[in-house]
Image 1 (cartoon, one colour):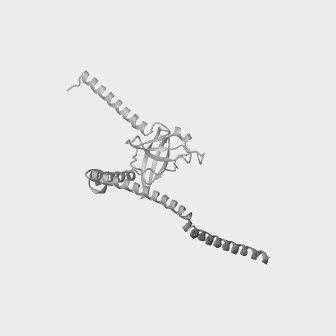
Image 2 (cartoon, rainbow, N blue to C red):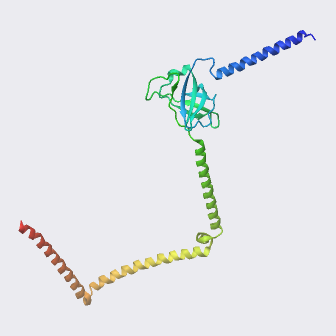
Image 3 (tube, one colour):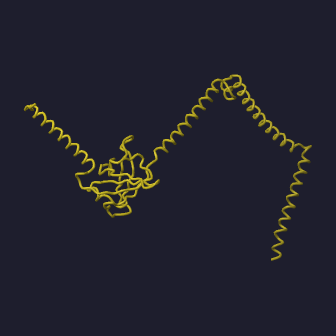
Length: 254
């Protein structure tokens, strides 16, 4: 069966389109992995990479400057992360530039973030250098703590709801006090009676003071109070003489 001219044209167009798609895919992959630009490599170590994967982006100052080239488990506490970066960013990185693991948005893919550095060292990085790393935040621990706080808050709200329900239904001393008019009236009467009693006590105290003053001026009791005053004065005089004598004795010794 011979191929017609129209079939040849269709086959040619299909081949051209296929090659174009293949070239586009190669270009995208090569651009993604920096195959068409000059690059250099650095690495850092972490205890936990928090879901970071090979091919994730590396950002500097918010700009994508490379990719995660490889992730290797060194031992049970160390994971090595190799980065391939565009050569253009090398002049901005110093020996003390730090790498950390972040997220692309709130729920986006993990990525590596590079801080500029230059605080403790002005020496630029070289191909194959190790950069200091910042431990990533353990999201699982944060979620566990938030879950515990939420559980405690739920228990507290439930307890408060139960207490409020008991108070509203008149259960317990506070509930009976708030919902029983008789108890409230009795408490109010008790408070008023206590105020009246205190007023009477103050009034009685003032009357006793007045009576005592009057008794001191009464001619029948005046001698008794005068005798008390004389006895008090004599005691004070004897104390004063003893003090004077004690003060003069050291002076005589000198």
